[in-house]
Amino acid sequence: MADYDLVVRGGTIADGTGVATREADVAVKDGKIVSVCAVSGKGKEEIDAKGLLVTPGFVDIHTHYDGQATWDSRLQPSSWHGVTTAVMGNCGVGFAPVKIEDRQRLIELMEGVEDIPGAALDEGLNWSWESFGQYLDALDARPRDMDLGAQLPHGALRVFVMGERAARLEEATPEEVAQMRTLTAEAMRAGALGFSTSRTLNHRTVKGDPTPSLRASEAELLGIAMGMKDAGSGVIEFISDFNTPDPESEFEMIDRLLGASGRPFSVSLAQAHRRPEGWRLLLGLVEGLAGKGHAVKAQVAPRPIGVLQGLQASRIPFSMCASYKAIAKKGVAERLAIMRDPSFRAKLLEEAREPLRSDMAARLTDYDRMFPLGDPPNYEPDQDSSLGARARRENRDPREVVYDYLIEGEGRNFIFAPFANFAAFNLDCCSEMMQSPHTLIGLGDGGAHVGLISDGSFPTTLLAHWGRDRARGRLDVAWLVKRQTQDNARAVGLHDRGVIAPGYKADLNVIDFDKLGVEAPVMKWDLPAGGKRLLQKARGYRATVVAGAITYRDGEATGALPGRLVRGPQKAA
Image (cartoon, rainbow, N blue to C red; front, side):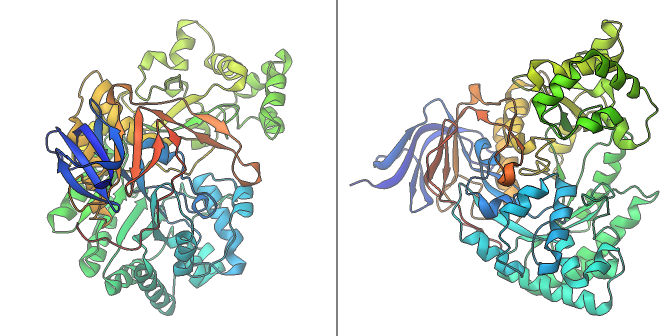
């Protein structure tokens, strides 16, 4: 008889704590790691990991699988990238709690904020819940290829309590704040990992209305935070523009919230191109809160934040032009045929020369920050590889160069257009952010912006680019693994995973580090109602293990679905 359920033999162990790698076997029984040494006993299943990197399963703390998780057992693309635990309900958007009359409002909010097709949500969501606890029960009923934790979204909570008044951004009454406090405590006790809110103008419904939580008062936020204190659990996630002349005042409010509630807190942080040094001020304010004894972190990304533009994507640089708007809803092949017509080309290029009228138009037409994505993709491209630079070399109008690139490759070409973390045409700012002791690796948005981005591949980029490929400033592999495993797990209260040691959950990756990398994203029309989404696979993952069961071998699903809903914080092994 076998001594263990699984033995991973002879791998190079990066155990999640950041200590130097070492060679060892890993033995697993009943979903837990029971030995990390030279294992003499046999396993029912064994993996020869000689020459391979063995890590804990990756923990992704910022995803948007809130809808997909109700109808899909495979949380791809994240599960292709070594993620074994994902946290969703970020950015203040989600689907519970909800009243029947508000269901469509929540769909419109998710579609607008996270670019998830409303038709797919309409068809895919069965709405078998009202309370947040009932939503967790619905999630709990479905096995999946990874563990999943959920946060209580402010938008849904506010609409549930205030109805139309929430959408009109009215101030909550004391009675409504008290109700939110009670519902928050109930959600935490039911198993929510935390609460998320958004105060950014970038978050709007598909109709263009602001997110309901945009102007929530300090009294409202305090009431919710105190609900978490009442329950004794939960982390707070905060997203804001911090665009006021005095961002310190917003941090003073955060200081008061944390002082009263004692809950851990995280805030999103990125380099805005229009204010390339502004992130330093915000990180300094985070450090100031930490210096007062608060458990505060900033979530940062390991590569540029941007969009993919192309005929298969949701946008192209000419999306604001009248002639393109007239054909935008046609299929790719039909649009491609129209765009190959010289007369249409001339007309559209002439329209593209009209003055820009919005920040979005400016983003879509920053030709010096438009790069052919390539295969494999390059997320730190040289400045002279931009389409704008190509136009100067060829003495052509950049609009013409972009247009011609879009219609090459049968319309399957993608333009990578970063709008954050790439102001200096390099990722030095990401390196600084990631190395701060006050940051976490996040913001991948797996399951969201499905027609514009494919950032669920962040974990693979983190390890391959920063640990192996970057020409300068490479980072220690064991440390990078710690950032994506133990650090993230502890930040959301999951102390039972993220480390390869006896007693910990047997979530593992076995990686051919020399071959590790991201593949080019492809567009698939596989969401409910035929909705489209970008999917991006990885290479180099020889095996991914969840609770001791092998879920993926060489990037292909095995059929095992051991993943479960994680309710509330988990105690240390």
